[in-house]
Length: 355
Ligand code: SAH
Image (cartoon, rainbow, N blue to C red; front, side, top):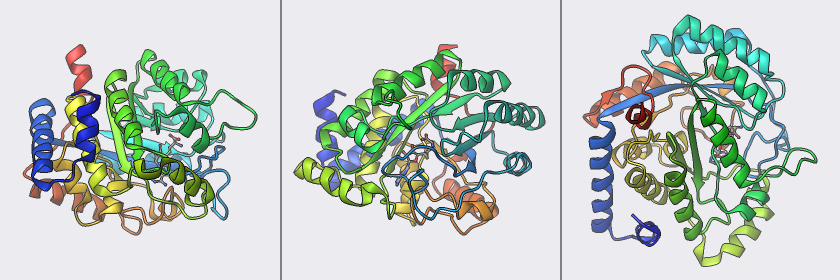
């Protein structure tokens, strides 16, 4: 599929034609990665952050956020739950928190690995080469770092560098992903759909970049405005004004088109049906993602007392639930779709092909 075809499909609104897109994505998913839906237990380790991403509700500049960092014991407790539920992977996500030091996290990774044998995915923001190496050596298997947009100028405006550093750019996150791959991580990336300033052209380029960089995992969710952030205020208005009629809407339908097209251009990639999609459409979002290209879900295992504080956007699906309820509902959704729950770590199908 080339640039113009992707763009055309993104702009398509005829329900009958879209049905063809959904079917093609679902069939490709089935043939290339099978019916298994892999469950990854999400642990929201810390909401402390030194960055000021203009979209994010826990950014350094976000007012009135009560900050927390889990203890080592809290984290290991979540990992034990993942094991009990039969998941193959845990995902440790956090703000870019300097209090998560290299050695502290390395020890947790090594202990968690030894105790549970689970695959370990990290999503801890942009970190030093030393940290990435130490964590890989300690047993981390995968790293998620969304490049957020291929438009360098837009990236610069929504993702200011930390302090006086001027090294932050779109290409920088891509370079970091490539370094991670060199260190032996499976790498995951992704974008939000409908951030102010994102045009149809940009989103097309994003999807082409997924293919170009040959990612192992690609997460795509709608942009959900977080009150009090610059992107929900004047910066958002300015960027939307600049994009004009080419602005991509942040709705579920457009997100599903992006998920389906990503499955078609990256047939063997792991693609989650994201929590953001489930938040935008609580009744159907998760199931629609799974039936239009996705093969992964990341149920939240964070203790309820922390969940409330990890609001990168408001009203996150499952905010007031226990893990038991979330996991039960997800299993039922998988069953109703006639799919199976994945066994084992659910490593990159791409990787299997290569090794
Ligand atoms: N600090 C880590 C983890 C960030 S949260 C990092 O920077 O990688 C993971 C993803 O959530 C982000 O990469 C972003 O794409 C998404 N996200 C953040 N704010 C959002 C919002 N307001 N709406 C939707 N998705 C958002």
